[in-house]
Image 1: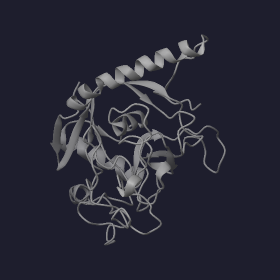
Image 2: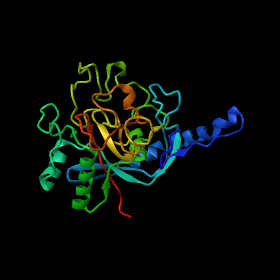
Image 3: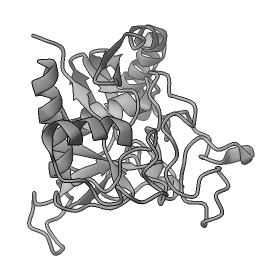
Image 4: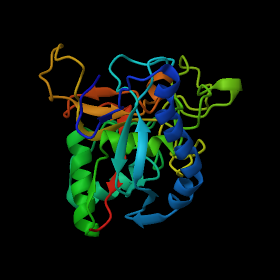
Length: 284
């Protein structure tokens, strides 16, 4: 079990098997009944600096992955409930055009691959950004808008990615990303571009989830605010030295596209498959 701030372990029950299922069944039923309300509330949209934000309703979300979820990594949280206040999140990953406004206004160093024709289309997600670059973008957006912006926490990111769905492995449900020859995300396809894109895709190229958010699976892996907390402290990095990445990318296989999946990298690391999106917090 991963112990992380903001994660609440599901209660354990000492009663019989039938009784043990009742609390979760009731919770899943409640989430199913609330889904139309969540979806309706998530239609509220704000825009700033060319970035469209969608409102994610406050409430209790079931996050994590069950032990029998196909493709599950050992380093994933068990199913647990998290209570979140309402927040806004960018409907798409930050694009090269949006990031370009930040570069022009601040003189910040250009990211890797800024001149790479395979990755620098105006509507492609900006890639090659470090965690520090993404955090600097959030600080700039806070300054120019007067509203607080930051990278999403893991809990916020996963709740948004699930789009109100409960107990499903992907943002769209249970189907594999390419089931039936219909691709639901941009991912690695043995370099054959079966999904239509050899590299990152223009944002919004695939259908959104029920919260109106695009590319919460695939395209580019997204930096989160959180430090990565592994199950053990082994490996070459000191505990807390890495930052969390979510969502998988155009270089990822299907298992990495699940909302519960977790990746990590040093905050100074950059590559063409790493980007980000932004959270906007409501005024107090």
